[in-house]
Image 1 (cartoon, one colour):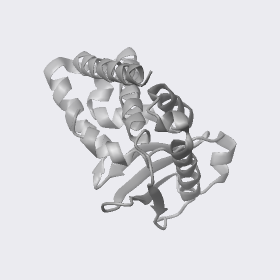
Image 2 (cartoon, helix red, strand yellow; image 1 turned 180 degrees about the vertical axis):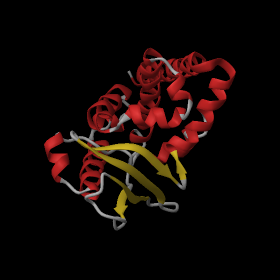
Image 3 (cartoon, helix red, strand yellow; image 1 turned 30 degrees about the horizontal axis):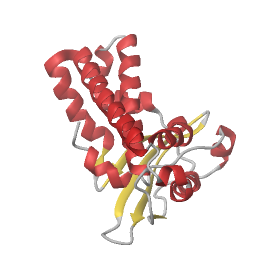
Image 4 (tube, helix red, strand yellow; image 1 turned 60 degrees about the vertical axis):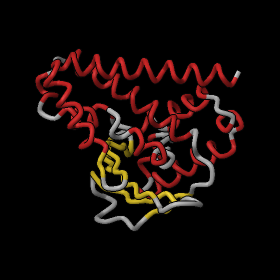
Length: 216
């Protein structure tokens, strides 16, 4: 599970997207949707004194409010699980989605806490914005270092656009986790994967608590 940790530390400053009513999302083109939401969250991260001061609880609250409602975690998890998804019981699927969701929440939170002077640039959309699935391409520009390339796969749903995959520097999140998931399932089955994710999330939660206490 360490493969994406370093990759997403800088990245998910830009994946800080998504928040807005479904009606508004339905009326927007894909790039407009991503751009508006990502800029909203970036601005919060840059100006919120609690976030800048290292308040992990505040960061988690922003992730829950601004990012989570606009990600299709069930599709993302099913794609990462691949053929094993069909072998899981409905309860196992539910647990797997919940644990994977929590893992990405902590990942997003770590990135948001590091936002300082980054800016986001978007590239022209390939294909038709009226398609049911599109890819939005962007890059995070920093004061130092090369731009970080980030692409998003979106799907159009009755509730508006939803993100179901993210590409960072050429690596798609789903494809990267797919290998990790398969390895854990081959060792301990679906329950083994759920246990691994749960243990990882407990460690991340404990780390967040320690960070909060150290700031008190």
